[in-house]
Amino acid sequence: MSIFTKIIKGEIPSYKVAENDQFYAFLDINPNAKGHTLVVPKREVNKLFDLDEKTYTELMSFSRKIAIAIEKVIPCDRVGMSVIGLEVPHVHVHLIPLKAMEDIQFIKKVKLQPEEFEAVAKAISKNL
Ligand code: 5GP
Picture 1 (cartoon, rainbow, N blue to C red):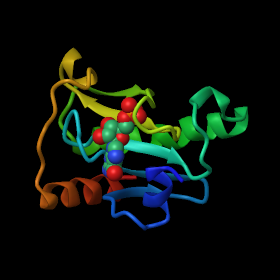
Picture 2: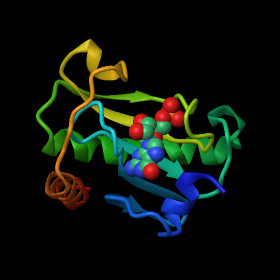
Picture 3: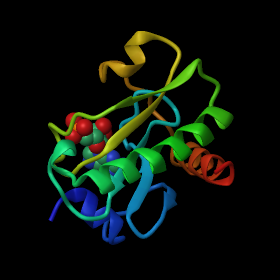
């Protein structure tokens, strides 16, 4: 079972942003920028392009809604999207508020307090 499946099941806590029957969105615990969100299909599949086409399309559509909400609440130039999966072998879309190219590079990290994570997750969620 992946760490994200444990999060989806509520066995590991997360700062939830949104959820439907197929997908779960929550804040990345080691964010590139404030508002960095992960969108995960509940069914555990390792690689993005191994998803069936319908799930893939619906994941993108769900991620788009979250990205639009992030853009409303986090000051940024735009929200970038990245899919890597080298650390956690369970499909996830990174949605990252960008001000500069380095914000997408997984090098510069920001430290947030629990109250900040809480507030950001709530604000994005309210703007969906
Ligand atoms: P990737 O697999 O795309 O290379 O990176 C996995 C991402 O998941 C990283 O950005 C990492 O910070 C995030 N991550 C790993 N474990 C956890 C966790 O337990 N909770 C949360 N919220 N994020 C996690």
